[in-house]
Image (cartoon, rainbow, N blue to C red; front, side, top):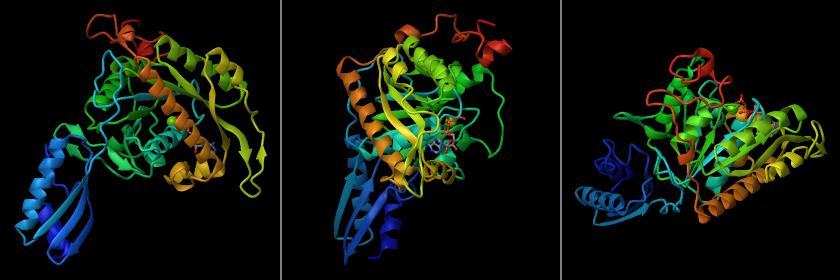
Length: 384
Ligand SMILES: Nc1ncnc2c1ncn2[C@@H]1O[C@H](COP(=O)(O)OP(=O)(O)OP(=O)(O)O)[C@@H](O)[C@H]1O
Ligand SMILES: [Mg+2]
């Protein structure tokens, strides 16, 4: 018995519900062969017991038919997701919790924070997805090191791309590199809905959603499509950024989204040669704003060159430099966010019923009017 024979036999075992086999999916691991005794692990994405059972039976049969006498198939399945107690409309019901990462202003580090928080949550043993909802400027594929990878399509659904222990999907993974998109508000809404409905997300404990900057159609559509468990605001310490962040926090309030905290990014600078921390834009300046919105600064992330190179090279600090100051602070922030999410669920969860559109069917509800792209272009939007 050789590894080739084992793999070839197992490649006849289809993943239940799919047209692909467990070897092609990359689920088969740790193959051990001792004469005619074979043991291996199948690392699957479903926690349904019938899926595990079917794979076990078919794999055992396939291997016995090529001469194996003893087959030890260990199925590694995710734990049953912790129940969310949220209510209202949810077009991605297999996802238990949704974390919306927002900022009032562009370029403050939302994508960097989303990537590192998602990886840090997964490092805590949670099943995590990362949705890049920045339709115009999708940066997550590069930051996750999967810029060249195209997702697999299964029927009319798309499989998320896996990297660093999490699932990921982005408009950047669906279109050609460097292409620019001109989207109208209604198209953004459709895209956000499809990202939630037509991507084959596993049964996730938490989907982290990296939003485009500002408070527009994407944010509103997300809040209407799924009960967003918590919102995270990313800001930089300068006053101009704080003004915009206040709008982001106010949006969470208006959409009835509990606030999981503020990440103050680019808060100080850590010199790579000496490790000394310098104050550049100020530090801790978001504290009064946090108090105003009854929340906390859950991390002050310094400007650290490794954070930028990690983003550019697709090697997030949380994964590649877990002992760096930024990675440690992202990990602490992730733990705090999860504690908040558990507390929100323990207290009855969230409900997005109150933010459902009141406009007639086929007409989109505009967020605040004036600032959204659909309202400037008119058309399908009800408030042009
Ligand atoms: N703490 C940090 N230290 C060093 N560089 C950082 C830090 N945070 C972010 N950056 C870098 O700053 C740039 C902007 O960050 P990022 O893309 O995460 O911001 P964003 O808020 O998502 O931007 P956009 O609004 O355009 O989506 C990136 O090059 C990123 O690597
Ligand atoms: Mg971004």
